[in-house]
Image (cartoon, rainbow, N blue to C red; front, top):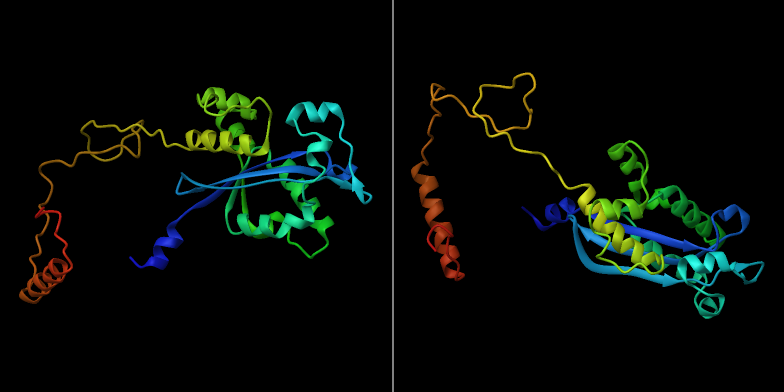
Length: 249
């Protein structure tokens, strides 16, 4: 398999969360924190993107309500020297571009992200134009019959103790959602090891089925002389490079 084929098979996920000054960007609320962690082929890579943002309104820093501060713990003073969104927009896009975003209640976060992209006035794309999006809130509804909070899912999958969530920070919640997502999407198919012929009603279609001893024997195709010679040449090349076939080790 070529290197290009290997790269294509990698599934890059960005688990994302934001913290904001309120619940509706159309009312002037802004993003104050973005947290992302990267997963490739369902494994955390250790790469992350995390930034605090000074929320602006009419050219000046917004003053947040205490109720909002109590949720994420970010004060106006703390955010006063942080960059504006337009100053970090491109590096943020570069980090998430081409990935599948995994977000809990994606409508909320993506709505804010698209609003911020628009306010940056650089012709920046919408989120759906640069990423695919998976909403774990919708996944939880399919799984449990009703949408579940991140807190509920973390307790259900027994990962709630893996992250300290004194405050609901964006990076902290993204890390927790990553653990939830791994458990939520883990395949739990049980193997049916019973002997049977063909698929029968009520039998798991994915179960292991034993073939009867009376089945027709498979035809054995032996290597030709040219193929055997090519094989010996390949083993010689491996030996010159200091390698050894695993069946000889």
